[in-house]
Length: 279
Image 1 (cartoon, rainbow, N blue to C red):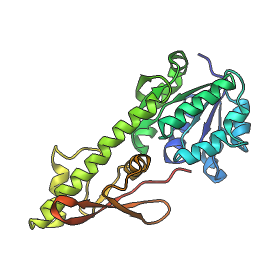
Image 2 (cartoon, rainbow, N blue to C red; image 1 turned 90 degrees about the horizontal axis):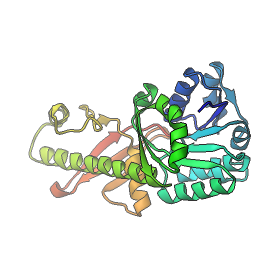
Image 3 (cartoon, helix red, strand yellow; image 1 turned 180 degrees about the horizontal axis):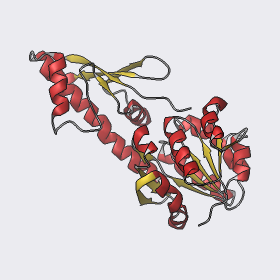
Image 4 (tube, rainbow, N blue to C red; image 1 turned 135 degrees about the vertical axis):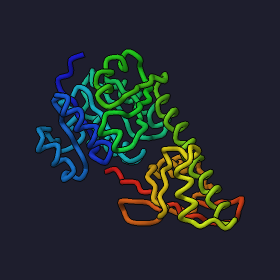
């Protein structure tokens, strides 16, 4: 499939890196971000910058988006100036944000009404993995549309997995995030147990981090600094309507600090989990 122009909405930590790879691969790329300053690095490298999502959609054949959450997606896609308003028949949307399956299905239906197509294609991986083009992408939607878009997705990912009908990619991403959230809680239980039993904090974390048991997705350092995206656990619980054991989220705008309770051992464990907010 020869693509004349790609559009990319969302120049946060993940989106900017994915867009940069598409630009480097030779695609004609137009980008949009609510904070225009975040588009400057790609503009200097040759990307065009749209004034809004509707304008971007009017000139792109395939539009990828990677924004923070359901609210942000609805703003850039479904608002009166959203990308779906400017979509032409034949436009393909690839929604890469982590959003609810119900919103994915709703957008799929609205795209069809416009004569367009939409794939839900959330990603698994960090900003470093995105920069290297080694993401794993879960895709839901029309199989023929997925096949047409595969060359674009392969610029971004080491693996793409077609999961089924609209919303299937979003469901698969939440399944993966569930494991991440449970891993965080299990780690809090282990640390609470070790501290209550008298192990020194720094040594406990240092040795836990060296074991094969601790997932690479939950790296530790002696200052409790680790870098899985806390948004995953937070969003999973919010969608389920649960408060669970994530007691609080505080800190600066660009990062979160979660407090996990090792409930079995009666200790509150502060786990500093840094995550960059998307635009």
